[in-house]
Structure formats: C-alpha cells, structure tokens
Image (cartoon, rainbow, N blue to C red):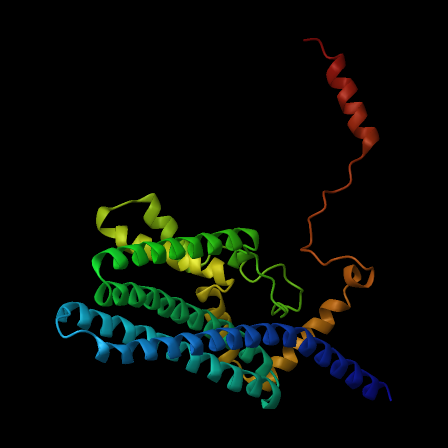
Length: 305
C-alpha cells in the first residue's frame, strides 16, 4: 500500500508538471497559428501582385519590371515559407508532446520555441519585401507625380508601423535572460530564469565591443540584430538550442524519471517544507564569545597609547 501511495504521488507530480509545460506549449502553438494566418494573407496578396506584371505597359522599364517580379516573388516565397513552417509546428509539436514517451513534452516545448523564433523572422522579412513590392508597383504603373505621392504615403506608413512596433516592444519588453520557463532545473530546484548569465552571442558582442576593429563592424551589427530579435521574440537562440540539445541527447524515460526523483527530493528539503523558497546554502559564521570579545576590547583600551 505504501508503494502504491508513492507511485500515486509520483504520477500526480508528473501530471502537474505536464500541466505547467502545457501552458508554454499552447503559447507557442497559438503564436505560430497567428503568424501562419497573416502569412497566408500576405502570400495571397503577393501572388496577385505577381500576376499583375502581365498588365504592365509595353514601354515600361524592363529593369523595373524585373526588380518588381523578383521582390514580389520573394515576398510570396517568404510568406509561404512562414505559413508552411507554422503549420508544421502546430501539427507536429503538440503531436510529439501528446503521443511521445516520457520527456517528449520537454523536447516539444524547447523545439517549438526555436521554430517560433525562426518563423517570426521569416514572416518579418516577407513583410519587408511586400512593402518594397508595393513601392515598385506604384513607380512602374503610375506617372511620376502619383508614384512620388504614393511612395511617400507608403514610406510614412512603414515609418508609423516601425514606430508602433518600437512602442509596443518597449511596453512589453522581456529580455531573453529574464524569461522564466516551466521546467525545473536538473537538480530539481525551481530556478529563477532561463538564462541567468550571458549567452554566447552576448559574450561575443562584449568581447568585440571591448576590442573594436573596423573590419568587425558588420559582424557586430549582426550580433546586435540577433540580440534584438532574441529580446523582441523572447526566445534566445543560444539558450534554447542548448536546452533542446540537452533534452534530445538524453535517454527519454530514464532521464525524465531521474528529474522527477530530483524534484521530489528537492521538495522534501526543510526550506520547502517550511514554506520558504529554496536558495543556495549560505555559510554561517562561527558563534562569537561575547564575554571574551568584551574583555579583549577593554584590555586594548586600557593600554597606554
């Protein structure tokens, strides 16, 4: 009977942990679905724009027509790629978490976080190509006055869009190193954040900024953009890739059962039983004999200076 009670406790703990991770899984799945819906809409618009190239005037500039077709095709391709990636994520991610063996939920959540970040970047690039395609269409079809006016309107709209993104980003900014995950640490402790220290990209940027060389300027800008995307999306590529590889290389059932045992052992600590939060043991100074300390101080004061 005691063995059955202990098995029931372990099963209840597994179900509770899965419920926590399921909230993360649902977050990434809903985000991927949202990206897929918008990408499908933009891909349809880009395809319609590519079909309009056959209606251009015969005296249109061939270079401008070629540029328009290339940019419009890139906008359609990037949005279709975002649509396909998001669809695959929403299909296979929850499927792995639901039907996989023990530990599959960890792989599904970490993998979805990485794919969600990549899908968002692809969708963002497709949106930029869509704006450029609209500007080129105005330049080719309309006369110089109307094309200049509409290009200015589009430029103002793009500027407003980026300012809105910047405003929203500042309001809801969540640095990647402060993100709290639903998983426990390998030792069974709760853990404070996903990345308590600097990631590999931050370390590279710190080293390059301390020793600036002009030929490293493009690489520094690339690292700046990469860190900005990590904070904008809330997913650090270095951290989540390391977490995913750590989970994927483990023996699923044995590793998961070991982590459950560590969590149970951690919950049985006195700090957890007393309702406090577990922290690292703080070294306590040895007790001081107050009487001896006062006598020593009085003797030093009695000595002549």
